[in-house]
Image (cartoon, rainbow, N blue to C red):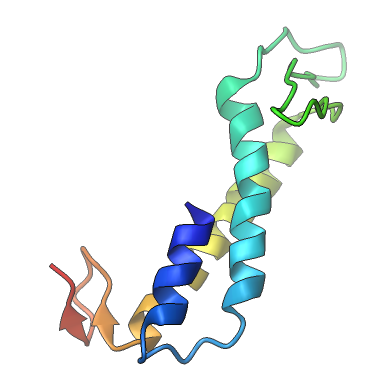
Length: 108
């Protein structure tokens, strides 16, 4: 998905966001954590309120990070920032982000 988004933005002649490659890389990296959160096998928390989900990627990378509430807060904040960057890239091209009432051409 990240690559498709990057291609669409780059191919649009109205694109003004020169750092799209960086954003695409951040989205790609965030998708790795998303896969752990959605597809990991979660075990009960330990005495420190941390859990280590069992997850192995298709590239055979084992997820070994202990997850606690602070981890989730960081992920939530990071994803919110990525979402704002996507919205900004779309509005900088002169489009109205779907569901908003901002300026710009309606996409659909």
